[in-house]
Length: 263
Image (cartoon, rainbow, N blue to C red):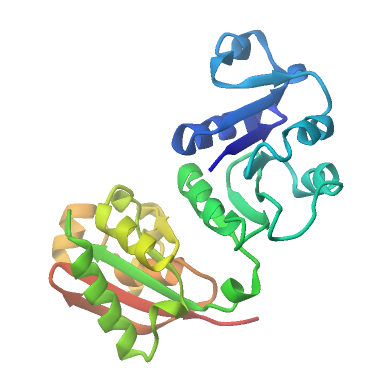
């Protein structure tokens, strides 16, 4: 992936730098926002003096992926003259200046923007937004917990067993959610990669707001400070979720499954 990241405000530049540290790529920012403090660290980004629209005209065709830290409206205006079709266009992800949302805006499937938005959301600790039809209709949210360094084979076995109990397959899953302390759990990332299912990590503070709705595990409470992982993560991972598979424990793993409801 040849990636360009563009930020047009000082706040956006901090978000862009966070993304760059995680995903790499070339970072561009306009001369007009460069303070003396920022200039002392300019080795990690490139400064441009033209308009952002003119910059895009120069960069289009050189990169297969773009991340814009700015409003979606601005991105629409500065890229509209270059867009051809979904098989030729680069992936475009738009991120707000607080890093809360990473929106897959162009070439979601063919260009890889859907996957890129997931990666950006993990880097920023925010949420990804995907609106392509095949993704938008998926309603299954899987909450998972596991012992440290649990192999992916055990996680996969638990995932398949849990889904089978509710008549679902991995093709029905919109995302897998776990607690934030598992952000470096190799097996979860391998599971996500194998099935192309996005990962989302939930803060312990947020889990505490719903944990009284579920049975508590003394061991999890002692280790993580929260009563459970799988069920709260399944509920909090999506929108308007209802548990359809309560917590299932197997070989050092736990799973719970929730289903989102439409408006």
